[in-house]
Image 1: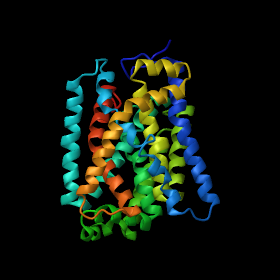
Image 2: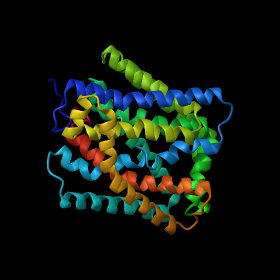
Image 3: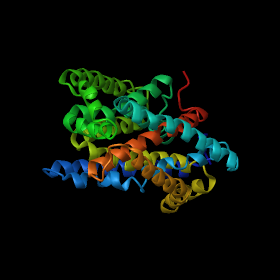
Image 4: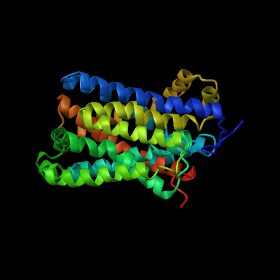
Length: 348
């Protein structure tokens, strides 16, 4: 049995192969199918575009971060304890609480930070699939930075270039929950001049990241990396942003993180080795259910505190995105800790 060292639990080549399919294939299919539908249909009503984001409340999206209290003991091969849970809870309270306060005090700045934080985190979410599941050999710091900047940047930058009016609209929804007058401070982000410079610069980085892999990766690894990058660019350049983010959040980012979590736990690894994907996802759902439920309670509390929230669809969507932002900051801290522990941040 061949193993790799991403967790205290030995992972066989069969389990790794099944984990790779579970982590990657649904995302490829979901993005490609959505892209085809959008190209085939003239317009998609907003109510339909919001379905993936609505589903993400309970399916994959929000729950994918609801197991951070189990990541620490499982990644260190130690039993779960009240002390560990209290530490994780304390980090969430301090980091998430501080960021929540920032939304009330400086909502425009908090929104800009949300974009940068998500850029980093969604790039971060590609490190484990690329270096552990696909098997990229270039785990240098340069390769890590390329992954963070390019893979994380595509979902954040390409919609701004392709759909600036919709991007501006959603930004206004979030900021207006706290201070409608602060929306004007974001106008510079949507100017033609800024988007032109951003598009040229980011496009250059995407091309350079693909070219740099030629001859330095094996053929299969490079093809997977290039294929995913081009699929993501085409997807976010074509699919309306709210629909695109919802599909990507559930079927791509969250599922990849969930598979990473499953590879930390011995019984889940055994199930993956035996090809029991449904059973292993059921195990995750059980683990994530308690804190997912608690998160929904906290979301209701946030709703009660936000000064300009109403029952309108755009306000509920904006509130959900702000709540996800608040949870993302502490979640990023734990994922970064796991990245460092597993040596995913490069070796020079």
